[in-house]
Length: 312
Image 1 (spheres, rainbow, N blue to C red):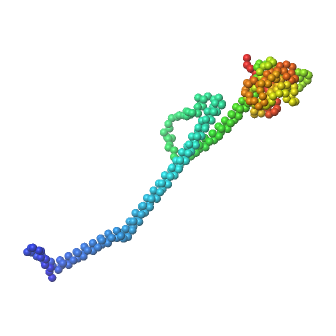
Image 2: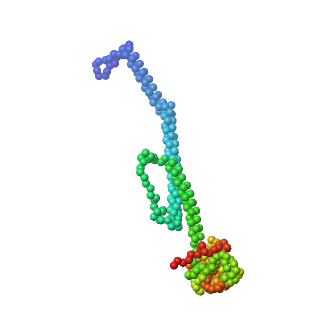
């Protein structure tokens, strides 16, 4: 069988043999099969197993990205916390340094040191050549460890300086309350402390102070600041005549006897060098003089180490 194809409008025709028709049909079937396979693949990619695998991969990447964002946020918060803690530590160290500078300046003044040599308001002088072989940048953990060690050292030094300041203040207060000087205007020691011949009987007796001969009515001055604790004639000490006692703190008391007149009253605060009485000869006395005693914790001690006779 032959198939005759007659084109429209032309006078010629084309004749196809049986073999030509079979080949054309096979070609059409093959083309249809390829189109079907391609359509299946496309459909599988869009709606089938390929789509599921691709979506799962995409969701996995999205989860990993979200986890990374969360880790970054946590790292940022931790960094901020560490920075805040470091800033607080730095502020504490700065406060300690200010205290150290203030303590150093006070101790320099109290000890009488050269302020130019111990100037706590300036950085200490340092220097030296650069050694290129040993230049190493400090790691963050090493830096934080050094910072903690320095902070601990500053706290220890601050405690030590505070203790030293307390000791120096105590010594300064003791020196200020220690009765040193010369209690009268002019005069000289006419009878020492300790065992002596009694001026009235000639017998050996204990003398609890020193006698300083001076002119009648000469002013008697407090050797250091204190509070007047007694004025008048004291029972059991009648031979002393009119007396004044001053408590200077730290266990020190001074006693002034054989007075002509008292210039202060009980409870009055007196300063070093202030006139508290006038030289007299009251009580058991052979003439105008001051009987001067120093008591430490209620016990009389030799006044001579506390006396500083005027020069010239």
